[in-house]
Image 1 (cartoon, helix red, strand yellow):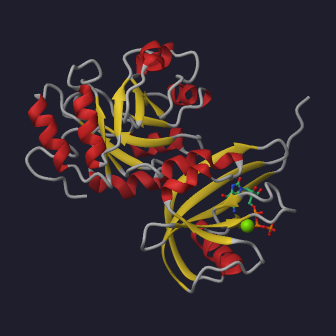
Image 2 (cartoon, helix red, strand yellow):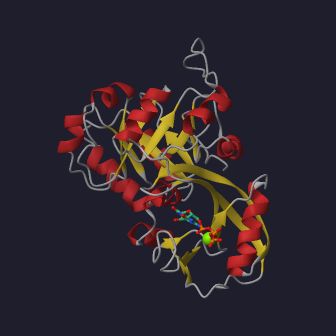
Length: 319
Ligand SMILES: Nc1nc2c([nH]c(=O)n2[C@@H]2O[C@H](COP(=O)(O)OP(=O)(O)OP(=O)(O)O)[C@@H](O)[C@H]2O)c(=O)[nH]1
Ligand SMILES: [Mg+2]
């Protein structure tokens, strides 16, 4: 017999300082998930808008006022004793200096420090998502090596990652990865099979990306030290990616694309219904551009991806 556990809705803040650091607090020992670092926040009251709930919690817990927030990611998680729906929101403007009004420890951390901290189990996907770029550029097919290298040189590495769809078996791959490392560009590399992914020991690959067919054949999370993503065109594929414990998904096609004009698009509404709550950092792909980031966030994706609108052909992409 399964016993229903209580279910709560929580809103939590990703407080981003001007210097790029993130403000976290430590949960008091006696509370649920006590002693772990958390994104400050708390329970949403019935009928309360999420933004108002977050502003209230931040005033109560950290003494900061008029915090303006926007959606980043929603995760539903079943603890042994509690079901939580966590709405994580970005906070970039506020008044007052955050401090521990309830006696809790408060600290600012650099983003690369976050994955090593101890968080509640539900937080793993949002911590990963915070380390990811907002945009993912897919290198166009059939580029020659010089054009690829020139484009890499023009990528704004702080905001755009690079998916190499055609270069996994190319002799110049080590050279390309070395260039990306030098430029600080995070690289997603196509996994041609799950077995291939497991044999991979390339330096400097940030993430493995599995096409939909590879995901369907995959029996477990590939044994790869970096992050793993998958192409998902259905709710079932997203659930499989989540069940395998993957980190990310490229969800497509969100809109009609020039390359597949006959393929019916999902639309953001449908994509959002599939994505919201899953423990995966999702990028919307297909007929989208960098200007769609805010829309993507409204519907539960953390970023947007594509070829034409993202790849810097002869000039940097404005983001
Ligand atoms: N604030 C916050 N809560 C989280 C995070 N991750 C996570 O699983 N939770 C869970 O979500 C719930 C949040 O409730 P809370 O204890 O902060 O609620 P609250 O501020 O309203 O406190 P109160 O019940 O003492 O009034 C807890 O069960 C907590 O374990 C997180 O990053 N931030
Ligand atoms: Mg709280």
